[in-house]
Length: 256
Image 1: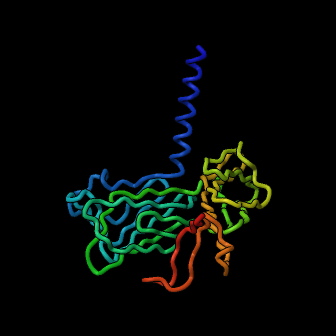
Image 2: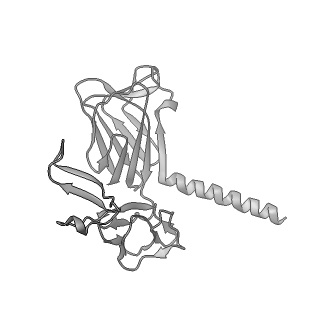
Image 3: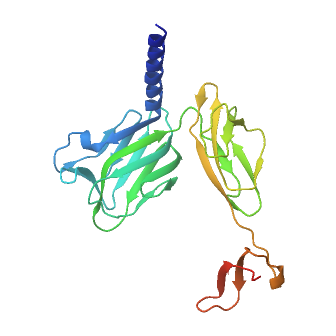
């Protein structure tokens, strides 16, 4: 009887959790829309967004939606949602036409930011981009924390975490996923070695996604003018004339 109850609880938690997760992201899959060959597609409705296209057609060849150069793709959030990430999946024989975003940061495949509407413009003077799907991820009930600090440092760096008003921040510095059992953020902290900081914000019964930032410690170098100040095993940069460059790098090995 106990086993059955546990199984039922696990099933309910899984089902409920999946429903909550589904509210925070969705995928517009053009390959399952049933378009006919060469059909013009101007708008696609999702659960919490619409995708508008200014010059796009579906082609069975390549099984992708072809968005032509000079055209625009606009992702609009609905139902009071805010977008924090958009991921494009491209089809075979896709071209390399550049794509720019109206706001936020875009690397050609993944957009990140915080907006209710994002417009992507396809550049170039020919060809097209072949889209198979667009995944839209929304800001959950709580916005993920912001992690600030000198990401590349020599001796140390001070790290500060911030979140929206009323939210509590929990973090880790070893790269593991934070939970409400992790260290609670109360004040800036100092790192003296390379670490991966991850943080979440919790407000009531709502939790943000994980924010991640890598902080890298660099090897310090000290200027010396006397070779006797060097020790066996020291890493050195020699400034002067080398065979093909203005400096050389190596390791000192002391002769006994």
